[in-house]
Length: 218
Image (cartoon, rainbow, N blue to C red; front, side, top):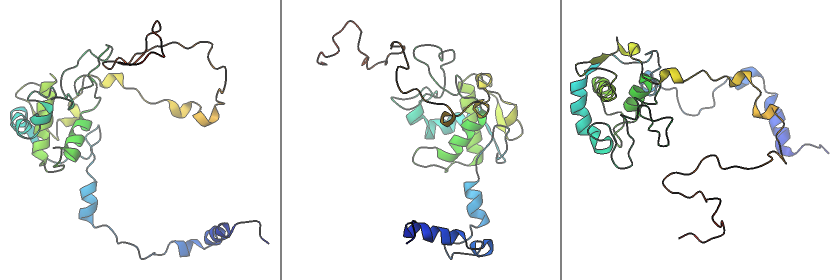
């Protein structure tokens, strides 16, 4: 009697099929059309690769933003209620309440354009024309003091724009360092003592050392 389960034998048999047979068709689905592929192939890279033709001004972007974006993000991209803030926050990253906006945190303009083009407005994604995306992106640059009010963003000058925090992003060195699987994990007595290094903000749920940890929460 074989020591392998039946399903293992089936897999071994399938693996022995020639490459020619595996290269055949399985009569599933169909080949995607060029138009279908183009509809998905819309990503934009930091060097501008993938950008569509078009342009948009800050003033036009302000009009579109007011109509289609301000209800969530505010008239000046300052954010409404719990919706994301897209402007301001410069110099706040090292503070207790960092604001990760386009001007304070984001590294590349392509992320702004790509996200708007792919996912906005909320509930009506990919409804914007290329010129509208350029205009909204130009307006957001102006709201973050990156460009002047008369600026016109286009495919030609896109890659020349640098966001303020780009220099604080560095290449990931992890391919040159041992992976987690290569390091023997510590399972006991890993620390001599435990200290609270950060505290939850707003909710104030981190217990104080002098308080009784078993006390009921109000």
